[in-house]
Image (cartoon, rainbow, N blue to C red):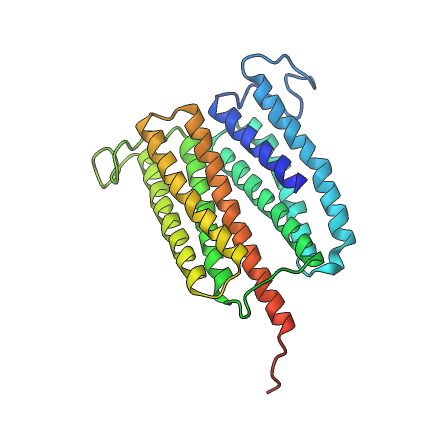
Length: 295
């Protein structure tokens, strides 16, 4: 969980740095203006602090890897999650350098942000799996097998929507569409920025539908309290996200609201990831405890 929190802090600081136009205040990597501790002027403090948090993730990931490898026999989920964390961490470090060399191009920003969220999700999964390997939780007598799959779809759509939002922000397309539900008064859009904005809106609507569907599904089918609470929280975050999106357009993208929109999107995605993991663990535990009939 320490790794999750520090990695999330690094991601939030990275988003805040870019939104404030300070993403290239350290034009070199891994140093900043050729030194470890540069002069903190013109926004350099934000980029330097982001890198400090990113550096602090390294020993935590190493500790997770060491402990995960030592305890891998406790759960079949630990080793695959550990390998995923290691791969994502290496890719994320490389993308951090590439983003600087590419001057925060929209594509590099999306890849960097998406990989960061995937790494945080994997670290969170490791935390849940490790906790589940040493404790037992109450679960419904007969968990619904379809719940994990339904939640995977919701988490995936939320992830794609979040990455599309990162592209819209990084490419300067946040105000390409000033009307709802169309774009600039038209349903059909023409410019690349408007296309990106409308695609983001379509996926945002899909996220709302998936979240509402997941909410209905887990309350209509057998599911544990923690799954239902997670999905309920996710649906609540979707509503907040919609309001933040509307406010950003109406108020012409104030910095604080842009950052709140990005952070809330990340929390929404991670909430559905947690719900998916909880549901999968409960189905797995039920299968292991239930004797199967011999044909």
